[in-house]
Length: 138
Image (cartoon, rainbow, N blue to C red; front, side, top):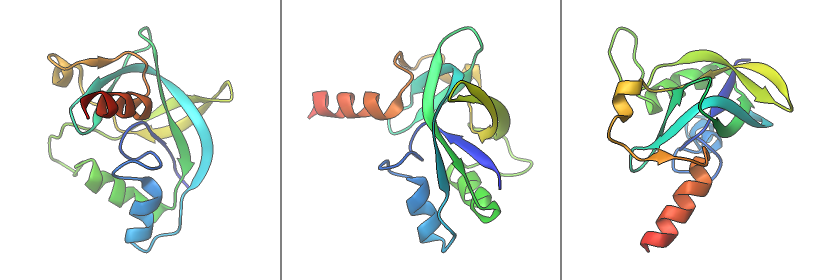
């Protein structure tokens, strides 16, 4: 089973909750392995974040799941990643720290050029940032 690192709207309780996506498609539920971090920067696209991988700039927080193979095309669809087409997100494999140990995970980062004018999420945690932003704007 592949492992994925989700850092934004695919996290539990968010609009594209990974568990809900599996349920909607009649796919077995993913298994939460726990929280992880990856080296990079997080940016606010408005309704979702984007991760720029960057070894020297901070940590982005997310959740690590083991997922059924059948769930991978669903994630690609949510992230609008299609073979042979240029897209905002790409799927790649990276080492994610989990309990201090590197774990190979699939994740969906964006290119540096996509975030040039966007606000950075300094905490690296989309869920905490979004809740604070949405509460302040209410």
